Image (cartoon, rainbow over the protein chains, first blue to last red):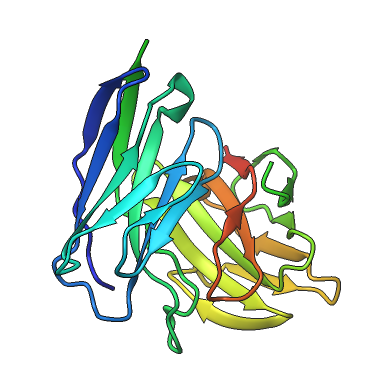
Length: 115
Length: 112
């Protein structure tokens, strides 16, 4: 599985933008970039995903570098509810083998949001 | 609320025992996945079923088994439990293996 590197932790103030980086220098051409987050005492929650172009949804934006070796999850205005562990994951769709449908979680980035 | 339900929420049992964790996927989802989250190993993929058939296996112990039933709900069976099996067990579902996975709230297993 291609590896991702994220900072262990980041801090932000409420209502400020947050940029969460992810490095994935060994990404393959067919790997999608997915972001999930896990709020305290909850299961992981899908945030956003993309392949090559930048993506926006109601939760966040995903900026993907032109060479696809890195990406940034952007929370435009952080709220206290955004405090969570954010995971950057490569893969899906995969075809065949034991990686079919599997999400490989790393350690993620712990985001702390200050009031 | 993701639409994925898991029962029970908490389970406390003793070493050597056997337990069954249950997962009901979102309506219309054919894929069900099981993950284990422990303090030292993080979130680890265990197994994936699609429409009743096993599709992928992770580092699932031989003492663990799973199945997906015709109504698409899934059960994870853990036997000969050890202290190290204490963890959060999450179920996720998706329409197909290539789609976004939606996670349930988890079952917290404590083995004493």
